[in-house]
Amino acid sequence: QWSWEASRAILGTMSDRPRLRRLVLALAAGLDRTTRIGAWLVLPLALLLFAQWPLRDLVGAWSRQANDIAQWIFAIYVALALREATRRRAHMAAAFLIGRYPLRWQRRLARFGEALAVLPWAAFVLFAGAAPTWNSVAELEAFPDTGNPLYFLIRVSTWLLALLMLLQALITLAAGPQPLPDAGNDDEGAAAS
Image 1 (cartoon, rainbow, N blue to C red):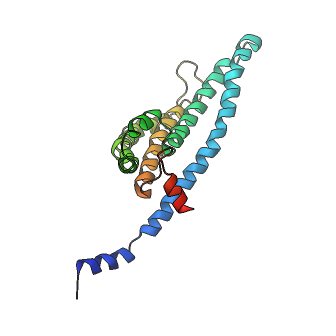
Image 2 (cartoon, rainbow, N blue to C red; image 1 turned 90 degrees about the horizontal axis):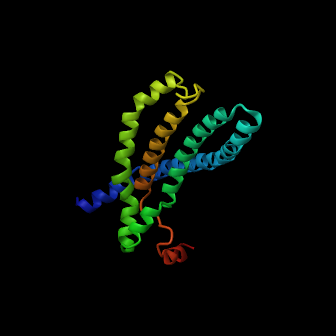
Image 3 (tube, rainbow, N blue to C red; image 1 turned 30 degrees about the vertical axis):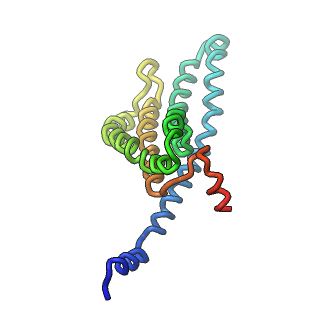
């Protein structure tokens, strides 16, 4: 005897959901690893920013080069840091707005909010910024005021930020509801352990 329920059960056993889940987890782990490595960019960034004054006043040279290098390091660092803040839901505005809703709505917003708000804009920036970014890389664009090389890395960082935000939104959408920090998930944590 054929039934919708039996068909759904059979199709459910043939789904690629476990494979998709493994792919999503591998992508998330790779992005997390990249972000952890990128966090070390703060050290050369701080060194270059602190070195500007002695270079300018004591040495009398290279302070603008230090500033230009610090700018592109900062751009890459921000691209990685914003993805990490999004992953951790550490944005102050999101916590302020979402905190007043019931837990059920918080979970729905956590899963679908990025897909509705971030995904379209990230895709737009990737699409609209692809040609200018490529042209900048192809020309090895330099800083306009100093002529120092590697300005194109700032454009690449903007495109990287949009790509990381798009990937994070897809991970959040595919992974399902994730527990929000400070959302009263103590019962779920106790049940899982």
